[in-house]
Picture 1: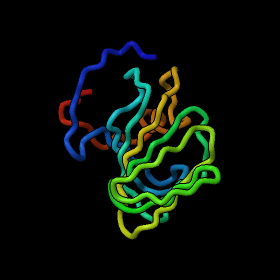
Picture 2: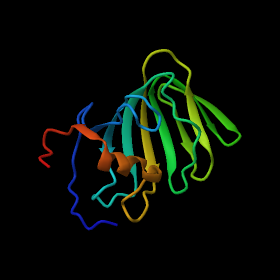
Picture 3: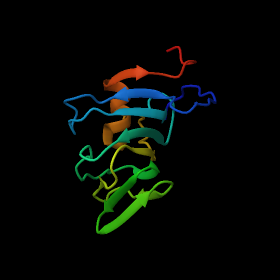
Amino acid sequence: MSDTPVSPYALEAGQGWTYNAGPGWTYNFDVDFVVKVGERGQGRRLAIVEYTTRAGEEPPDHTHATEDEIFYVLQGTVGFRCGEDRFDVADGGCVFLPRGIEHGYQIKSGGDVRLLVVTAPAPDDGASGWDGFVSGFERQWELRDRPPWDRR
């Protein structure tokens, strides 16, 4: 775990560290991921990310060996699958997907779907999370925006 000092902070709606996957990313679509709580250099044991997506931008089924995922559906309807279990979750609902079980989702509503995703725990090395996803884009993707008070 990192020894980097951590200070409390607050984010307004829409604020965070915004990273863009860009074309050519594993899933080949252009989505902005807004990191509310990151992993890299912050000694975190979780990550919180918000993003907007739509039908056709779903990732393929996959498995995370080290992190559980919690999806909170802010807007829209999403069908989740985790192993043999199926869940339809709409505005204000959430789903818990345990690590080690293949999972995925399908967007069932038209238009934009907004998701808030929490993953925990982050690996002890702080260098990976979501099997390299969160810390990976913190490390490699284009940082498009940051909170106004972040002067890094």
